Amino acid sequence: MQYNAPLTEMQFLLKDVFKASEVWQSVPALSEAIDMDTAAAILEEGAKITQNLIAPLNRDGDEEGVRFEQGRVLTPKGYREAYQTYAESGWVGLSGEPEYGGMGMPKMLGVLFDEMVYSASNAFALYGSLTAGAALCIAAHGEESLKQTYLPKLYSGEWSGAMDMTEPQSGSDLSQLRTKAVAQEDGSYRLTGSKIFITGGDHDLTDNVVHLVLAKLPDAPGGSRGISLFLVPKFKVNPDGSVGEANGVSCGAVEHKMGIKASATCVINFDDAEGFLVGRVNRGLVAMFTMMNYERLSIGIQGLGCGEAAYQLAVNYARERKQGKGSGRGLGGEADPIVVHGDVRRMLLEIASVTEAGRALSVYTGMQLDLAKLGAGEVQKQAATQVAMLTPLAKAFFTDKGLESTVAAQQVFGGHGYIREWGVEQLVRDVRIAQIYEGTNGIQALDLLGRKVLGDRGQALSQLKAQVTQELEGLGAPWQGYRTQLLALFDALLDKAAELGNSSTRNDAINSAATDYLHATGYAVYGWMWLKMVKAAEAGEMEPEFVARKGMLARYFFERQLPRADYHLQVIHQDPEVIMAMPNDWF
Ligand SMILES: Cc1cc2nc3c(=O)[nH]c(=O)nc-3n(C[C@H](O)[C@H](O)[C@H](O)COP(=O)(O)OP(=O)(O)OC[C@H]3O[C@@H](n4cnc5c(N)ncnc54)[C@H](O)[C@@H]3O)c2cc1C
Image (cartoon, rainbow, N blue to C red; front, top):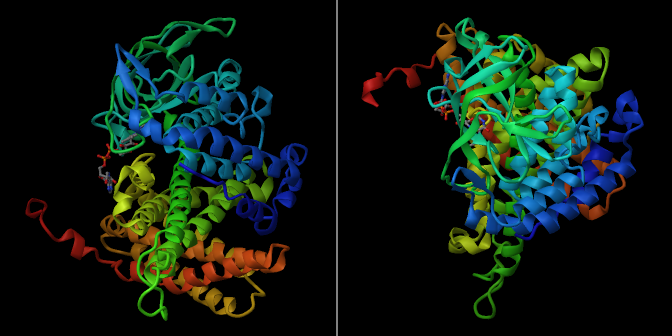
C-alpha cells in the first residue's frame, strides 16, 4: 500500500496548535530531552520506516496471515527481519524510561508515530504497541529487579510483551476470571489457567514473550477486588539475563479472523508457570489500567491511522477515476474525475474532517498523559483528570469514526472498493476489531458517562467547558458563531448528565444512554479541536493554502457534523423505558 505520512499536518499540531516547545520546557524531565528540531527529525525518520519498510509488508501479510505449525506460531514472510530493524532503530522504546534503555520521548510526539505505524500496517503495529504498553506497566508498578531484567529487553525489541486478561467466560466482566496463582516460598508464584484472544501471545519475531497476566490467589476476595497481576515470561530468564528454559507457557491455537490477519491472536495456556507479582496483591486491575489506558489510546489511534490511510487511497482514486460530468459541462466530451461530484466530495470531507480533528485530540491527550506522568502540583492533577475522561472517549470515538471513514473511502471506490487489489477493503476489515478489543466501545461509553462524567457529578466536564470557553476567546467571524454553538453543546451535555444522574432508574438510564452520550461528547470535543486548529492556523506562519483548507474543513465540520450531536442528545431519555420495556424473551 502506498502511504505518505502527513508530516506538515503533524508538525503544525505540535508547533502551532499545542506549542509543544513551551510544554516541554515547562517539564524538567523533558526540557533536556526534546525540542522541536529533534521532534521534526524523529517524525521524518518515522515517516521513512513506515512508508518504506512497514507499508510494503501490509498486503502480503494479510494474504499470508499467521500460521500455527507443530506448536509454533509463524508470522508472514519479512515480518521478523522488519521487526528487528524497527526495534533496533529504537521505535519500540520511543517513550520508554531512559534509565532502562528507553528514549524518554514525550507521548505527545509518540502518538504521531503510532498513527504512522497503524496507517502503514495494523497487524505489524500491534506487536510493538503491546510491547510498549507492557513495558509502561512494569515501569510503573514492577519491583526494581523486574525492571532491570525486563525493561531493557522490551525497549530494545529483543523480547516482546502481551496482555493476558480475557478467558472464555470472562471478557468485559473480568471478575469472572479463573486463572489461579499460588504463592511460592521464594516469593514467586505458580500460574495455571487458560487465556484466549491474546494479541502477540506467541510468535517468531522475538526470543521471548513477556506476558502480563491477570489471575486470582486461592484466598482472594470475590469480584474485581480479588484480581492480581503477574509477569510470566514464555522462557525463564537466567541470572545473566539470557533466555533460559521453557516456563510452562504454551500456545494452544491461533484464531482465524476477519482482519489483522498477520497479528497472532492466541490461546495461551499456563501450566504451573513461574510468575512474579506486579503491583500489590488483589490490586491487579489498578496496575493493569496503566497498560490499558496506554493501549486504549493506542487502539484509538488504530482508528485514526486507518482513517488517514483510507483518505489517501480515496483521494488518489477520486482524482483519477472518470465518471459522469461536473455541473455545467454539457453533453459529449470526456467524463470528469469523480472528485467533482458533490456526493464524492462529501465522503472525502467526512473522512478528512474527523481524521484531522481526531489527530489533534490524540496529540492533546498525549500531552495530558505526559503532564500527568511528569508534571507537578495542580497541572499534574488536572492532567490526570483529563486523561481519565479523554481516554475512553478517544478510544471509542476514534475507532467508530475510523470504521465509518474506511467504509466511506470504500464507497468512493465504487465496486473496486470491494475488490482486494485496491487495499481499501483490507482497511475496513482491519479497523473493525478496534471497536471491540481493549474494552468494547460500549464499555468505554459506560466508563465515560457513568464513571468519568457522573462519577464526579460533572465537575471534570464543567472544568473542560471552562477551559474551552477561555481558549477560544478572540475568534473572528464565522468562528465566533461556531464557538457559541459549541459552548451551548457543552451546556446541553452537562444538563443531560444531570438529568440522567437524577433518573429513578439510574443504572438502566446510563447503560441505555452511554453510547449516544459518548458520540455527542465526541462531536463537542472535535469542535473544540477544530476551532483551536483554525485559530492557530490563522495566527501562525503556515502557507495560505494550508490555512484556507483548514478553514474549509472546519466549516464543513460545524455545518455538517456537529449537528449530529443534537440528534444523539435528543434520543437520550431520562426514563429508558423505550429500551428496557420489552421482555427478554421477546427479542
Ligand atoms: C482479535 C482480538 C484480539 C484481542 N486481543 C486481546 C489481548 O491482547 N488481550 C486480552 O486480554 N484480550 C484480547 N481480546 C479480547 C477482547 O478484549 C474482548 O473480546 C473484549 O474485551 C470483549 O469481551 P468478550 O468478547 O468476552 O465480549 P462480552 O464481554 O461477552 O461482550 C458482548 C457484548 O455485550 C456488551 N456488554 C458486556 N457487558 C456489558 C455491560 N455491563 N453493559 C453493557 N454492555 C455490555 C459488550 O459491549 C458487547 O457488545 C482480543 C479480542 C480479539 C477478537
